[in-house]
Length: 271
Ligand SMILES: NC(=O)C1=CN([C@@H]2O[C@H](COP(=O)(O)OP(=O)(O)OC[C@H]3O[C@@H](n4cnc5c(N)ncnc54)[C@H](O)[C@@H]3O)[C@@H](O)[C@H]2O)C=CC1
Ligand SMILES: O=C([O-])CC(=O)C(=O)O
Image (cartoon, rainbow, N blue to C red; front, top):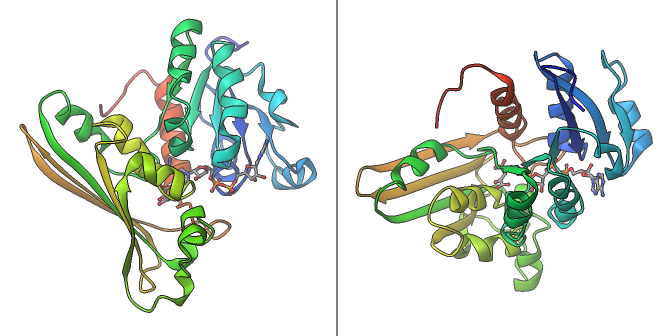
């Protein structure tokens, strides 16, 4: 268990987000210890962690079983493999694959029963604090537009199902309109932002999303529009994609670190 005042952090996945989170933790944050890392290729993981000041345990998902907080940064299909055991033992789960959580909402009951916690950081989205505040009153609509380059959308199951070749597009094209629940199935690696927005606000079926493939952009761009009784607002963010995995942007690892910092900081800023 935790040494007094120190949370032992376990990382599930050492891909484009996981490796950044590992580096930022190893740089040193008072009260947080990088205790264990789960990777599918453990030799590669060892290479990636070479030169770290502290060497965490490296293994399969089981290696995370005595950590206080598990940060899930896996492909959506592997989400439940770490989410369920972590919550069953009453630990805290920080979720990157927010879209995958939408089809495992029974985990909320598991957390309630065991005293575990599910924390969804803002990730690649801007304005969840205001969305949550607005939802304390009447909200008429919440919508998100996600605009990405073909390289950042390639590989999504929906594209194959619909026979859409995003690399052949010459102009910005709306390739999907639906709600956050439908989007999570259609674009499991591209619409976690819509899922987080849905969980913060009106729920997956009432959160509208439009996905645009735009060959002219080199950022992952998300625009949220909220109409509510207490405020009308729009948030807009252009995120630099990760070179290793352009579907994911470079803000999410930093959002996870800010979220972990909140767990041990005496001061908390924002909703
Ligand atoms: N919440 C948000 O705003 C955002 C969420 N994401 C999501 O975060 C997740 C992680 O993203 P990336 O790091 O870019 O993905 P990635 O594909 O680069 O990394 C995932 C890693 O998990 C590893 N992995 C797969 N199965 C495993 C297992 N059973 N045990 C241990 N490791 C395993 C893979 O080998 C890979 O290294 C994805 O689901 C992505 O869609 C991405 C961007 C923003
Ligand atoms: O923009 C990003 O970094 C990733 C993204 O759209 C998502 O996962 O929803």
